[in-house]
Image (cartoon, rainbow over all chains, first blue to last red; front, side):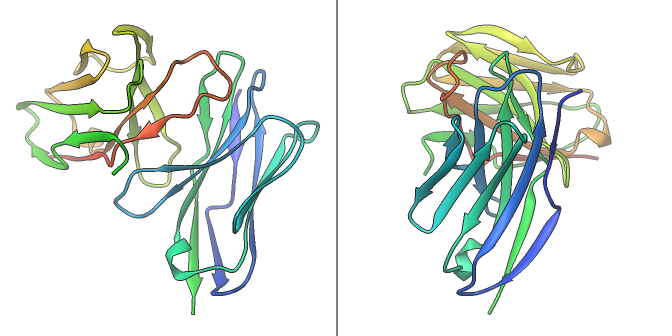
Length: 109
Length: 115
């Protein structure tokens, strides 16, 4: 079956760095997406990886290892506004997105 | 503002009611989606339309009936729902459906409570 695993909840301190891991098992692979969702709001696109390696975009970076079926989202210089859920999704051979349940990130002062 | 607008934002309905959710996208996309989001569960894809044609129906009960009159508008008609259908219903759109890098953009969702 197809499956995405990510931690349910994480806590970090303002100004620090946090890494949110995601492992995936999908039939075929056409890319790995990360979305951010604040409570009561729409999920918003953060990053897309289809090749191995690190993609950096400001304070946020996303990493992919296709051989390990593994990705992480790295958030630097954490701000209170980064408190949100982070959704990992893998696109399978039919170009369908398979979603994880999301990681709720709590930022403390 | 995400470019995808959903109404109503909140809806409470009885099990015998008929109601509809509406979605409109202003992004010039050709594909539109309905997702169900329940607490602590992955997003569940319900329906996909590409160029107004339904391309996916993921075993959704017939009490949910989608309608896509054009590439910019999508409806979800609801009738005789059950309490377990209470959830956040998200509409989304994208340029197409068959490209690996195709990004989908979500609306803010309609919170549905069935009593």
